Image (cartoon, rainbow, N blue to C red; front, side):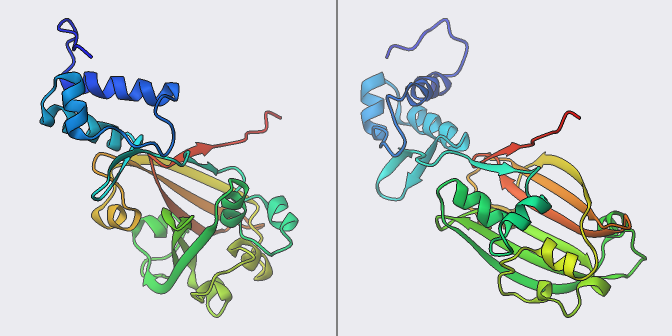
Length: 257
């Protein structure tokens, strides 16, 4: 490739554009190894620094992954679909006959193996949780924190916050997997989730999030905060899920009626 002198973009953007087009056209397919830095530099008469910057740009876009000592490869897994409008579906829960939570169902439906690692704790509600859960100052919460995996790759962080008076002593406050799903447990406790309010924001990950999810520099995350309301319209759960932007497509199925 000869770089276009009339193109105002930096050379590494032009090189990244060429490689991006090859990926989109399928010339470089999922799992394929990209030519090495030295090979790309020779092929395109570019400096190693230009090549390095181009590959870094494509890694930040989620198109490439690096394997230590091996080089760069086209990401071989498509983005995970996060069906936000189905994660709270009571019908889906009942169809599963309390055998699988909705995360497991969604991951398995996409041909992957799900896993969750959970921890629980009791905390004092901060300003956000006091507002979302309509709690008094210094109210206590039960918190269930999860790292969620698909094919052994950490893909999501999910923290659920509950008024402690609802969940104390229940399986929600046990670190073992709640295979039937926490909404089923809430229903058994007399608080059937009947509606949800979602708030979605985008930002850069915290250091802890980047470490837990192995997020490359420059990749933003989506933060979905879902408040669940029971049959009496009491807020009973705030679920905050962190979704790396290079690994997820957020989908809603909205009834037009």
